[in-house]
Length: 175
View: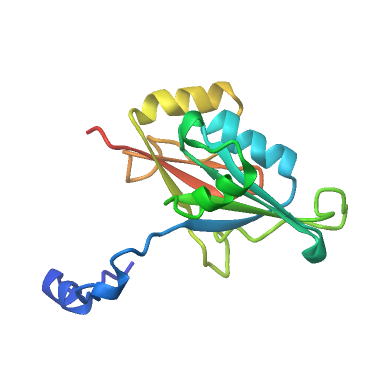
């Protein structure tokens, strides 16, 4: 595998200082297309501990979107209008998009997860206090792994798969 031909100084020179007009920008969400909201919402809430932050049904577009994230329950507004405004200010959300009928269409094989050719999307990353503890729990819950913590050359993290086959890196912020 070829190493990047860029050295640290070149990489730094390619990264411009942010324009002052972008000071209030946030990375709001990553969008994933999902086949079956029942399986996927269960996975992201029960397995990964995310909460439903906001749901938007769009019948004219034959789809629903579910914003998931790691917010505290008490921080999520109960009023739907306030909730919609609040979720627009949250950083790091997942927008799970269900296109009507994909869960019942027997000919629908699912979405490309980026892990096979042609490569594209890689994965999302979740930081946990202990990779070992999290992986033990995932194993007990029957979660499918893409890579266990001690497999391969890089052993400090693992990859699990969500119901649509998207890979989720599990890393620890504690060394």
